[in-house]
Amino acid sequence: MTPLGLGVESFFSALLRGENGIRTIERFDTEDFSVRIAGEIRGIHYHADDHFSTKEQRRMDPFTQFGVVAAREAWKDAGFQGQEPPDPTRSGVILGTGIGGIQTIMDQHESLLNNGPRRVSPFFIPNTMANALPANVAIEFGLQGGCFLTASACSSAGHAIGLAMREIRDGRADLMVTGGSEATTTPLCLAGFASLKALSTWNDRPDEASRPFDIERNGFVMGEGSGVFVIEEMEAAKARGARIYCELAGFFQTDDAGHITAPDSTAERPAAAMAGALKDAGCSADQIGYINAHGTSTQLNDQVESLAIRIALGDAADQAWVSSTKSMTGHLIGAAAGIEAIACILSIANGVVHPTRNCQQPDVEAGCTLDYVPGDARERTLQAAMSNSLGFGGHNVSLVFKAFS
Image 1 (cartoon, one colour):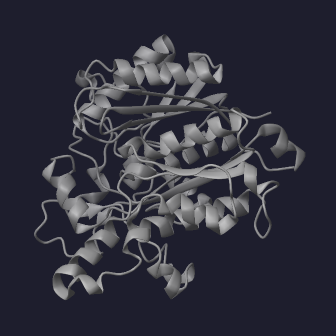
Image 2: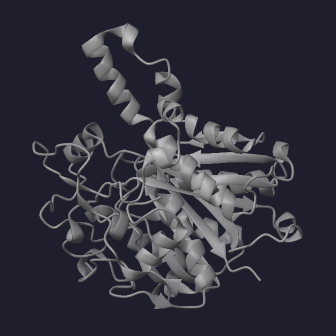
C-alpha cells in the first residue's frame, strides 16, 4: 500500500510509468505549516471500511491497519489464503516501523485534555505500542513462531527483512512475514520533520518536489503506507509449488556512530553494509545490475550514498542502474525498505527497472555521478539487485536479492 495505489500491480506499474504520488495534503488543514505536501494514502486507494469492521478499526491505529492489509495481500499471493501455513510454530512475523501509533497518541492526548482521564480509550496502549503491528499480523494468520518489531527509523523494514531471513537461515523458522508499515502524515510529524529542515518546501510544485540526486533537490517528502511480503525456506517453497519471485540472499548492517540525523560524509559505514551484504549473498559487485537507492532527495544523503556505492562496488558501480522509489512515493520512513524491497523483487522477476522521477540534472559536483535511470523505465535481465537504507541514527542496512532459477 503506497501513495501510488493499493496492491502490487498498481504500485509497480505506476513506478514503471514514473507517476507521481505526492500532492497537497488533504487530511488536515496545513495553512499554518511551512510544508503542505506529502505522499498520502488517499480515499481513491483505501477506505478502512472496506477492510475492517468498526470494532476492528477502534482496535488498530492506521499504521497497523496499513500493515495488516498489505500482509493479507502477501498471504494471498503466497497461496495461503484460507488455510494455515505448513507449521504455525515455525512461521513468524518480523515487521518494522519508525514511529508507530502516532495518530492514536494525538487523538487520545486531545481526549485527555478536553474530557479528562476517564475518557482515554482502553485501546490506547494496544493501539499505540509499535509491536501491535506484527502481533496483529500473527493473530490474523495464526503464526506462532518468532514475532517482534524493529524500529531503526528509515532502516526499520530493512532490519526486519534481514532478521526474518536469519530466522530461516538459522533453522528457527520455515516461513516469515516481513516488511514494514508507517502512517506519519499527521500534523505533529509534519511539524517535527519540517522543524528539522529535512522536508522539501516546494508546496506549489508537489509533482517536482522529490528529486533524488538532482542538483535542485531540497529535502525529502513525507510518505506513508506499507510493504509486506512472505519469505520461505527454499526447499519448502519448491515442494509446495509456490510462486517464487527471487531469492533473498544477503543482509548486512552497520552504524555510523556519528550524528543522530546526518550521515557520515566519509560514507565508510554504509559502504561496509553494502560490501557485507554482497559477501553474505556470495555475490560479486559486477553481478549487481540494479540498486534501489535510499535516495531521499536530501543534500547529504544522496551525496553520501552515491559515494558509498562507488566505494563498495568499485568500477562495477558504473554498470549498475540506480533509482529511487521515493521520487514517486515520498519517504515512507519505517516502511520505506519494505516497498523498496518489493520494487527490487519485481524488477528481477520482470526484468525491468523503474526510473528516478525528477532527476533531470544529477549533482555531479556533489559526487552524484552514477546512472540514476532518468526519464523512462528500462529493461534488463538482472542477476542480482541491492536495496539500501540509511536511517537517522546512522543505521545502515543493505539487502541483496538474486534471480531464482
